[in-house]
Image (cartoon, rainbow, N blue to C red; front, side, top):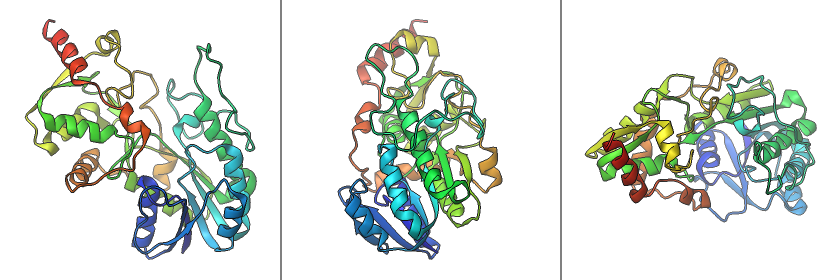
Amino acid sequence: MRILVLGGSWFLGRAVAQSALDRGWEVTVFNRGRSGTAPEGVRAVRGDRTVAADLARLASEGPWDAVVDTSASEMAPRDVLAGASALEPVTGRYVYVSTVNAYRGWPNEPLTEDSEVLDGPPDADADYGRLPDDWDGPDWYYGRQKAGAERATTATFGDERVVILRPGVILGPGEYVGRLPWWLNRAARGGRMLAPGAPDKPIQPIDVRDVAAFALDQAAADRGGAYNCVAPIGRETMDGFLTACVLTTGGNTQLVWAPDKLLMDHGVRQWTELPLWRTHAGVWKIESTRAQAAGLVCRPLSETVADTWAWLRDGGLPVEHPRWAEHGITPEKENMILAALGRK
């Protein structure tokens, strides 16, 4: 199997490349070479996928049985369209990593793999979907961009040759966003640790290695389709996740649970100050029935926690990314909320 990975040097892209090598596949990666390192054993082609000449040069390195696109998270649909158009003559199938943000109902409604996808034309530029400063409705900009990029792949390759993966939260070794590393480092610090919401709140993060394995399975399959890449609903809970962080780090840590209302009254930013905490009704109610039937297997979240801690302890460093700084509550604010809980 000959595969092209767009990206391939950090987090999901690197996991895809490494997993493909482990299967004995011939792997080419295409990126600018500015961040991260691809696994040893791949063939690296340097270039910018927004530059037509670089895409033409890449296409001349083909053919491939499939391309797995992991590097279009901040790319306008028209740029995905240009890349897909350049690669279509030399590539059998296209696996595009999208996001659950592409659904109109996320995060406010429960979702299935047949839920409505946002509007977004395949040739949209980076300004499509931007909202005025005084807009007070849903911010669908990112979702519309990703929905347009999805349509760019199917407009070029056709539905039968395209697989669209829609992950929610991806965790694991190499994570650059900082959600799980923040919780691990906080648990290792010990003491009374603020735990958000209800202990039995279901959550659905997925391990980066499981997304990578499923992407490659679909690259080798003979069908198209769209799949939600999330852990099964109800299998994991916030308590299980945070307890795993405490046990893994060995910290002398006591979980102190704070109700949603108290956290909101104190102005805690959902999703970032206490990572994975969000009160929207549909954020952790994403069905993945079709993906599971197609072979998606999600390892226990406790294994992801342990392996990420081992990676950090071994000196693992994520690729620098501005989102890392967004995550985590300050000790001062955490102590203020813990004090308020102590007075109740």
